[in-house]
Length: 186
Ligand code: NI
Image (cartoon, rainbow, N blue to C red; front, side):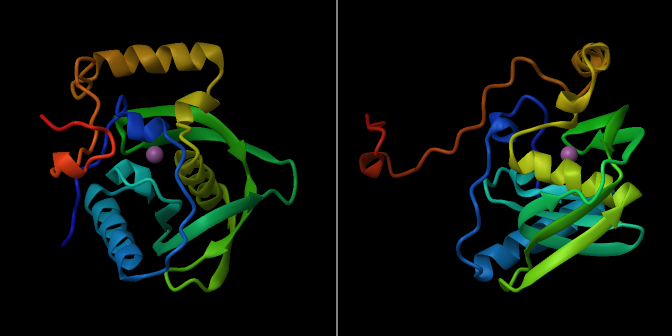
């Protein structure tokens, strides 16, 4: 198992748009394996790379026993039908709020070897694909709530046991200070 810690609400990586994947290499496949293992361990319907602190456009899903992944997703909506129902996020643990989403989606992208693939999703799969693609844009499902719902959600987050408003931002700094472009030596 290569289960990794999941970044929680408040971590700036969750608000940072991710970069497209360029290299379909062993490192990408390791990332996808970590995402898959962590998602399944936590019982999530999906997990996006930024939730493991990696700013790349890739997510995994586990919906109705269909487990997979998508790299560099681009969403298309075949119609204007909507759904409304409870949605949660492993980065906002234990909290669920009714969230409006499109009912049907076609997600085009690539598999871990760079082969084109697409997901034609409805219902929960469509919800998952939209939620995870939002993560890649630095968007959380809270942003999809109406102002009243968002206010309620923020109140619940502030009261959540896991929420630490004083947590310092997690920033990776090179151990090789002398080689750092940011001049952090000394
Ligand atoms: Ni999420």
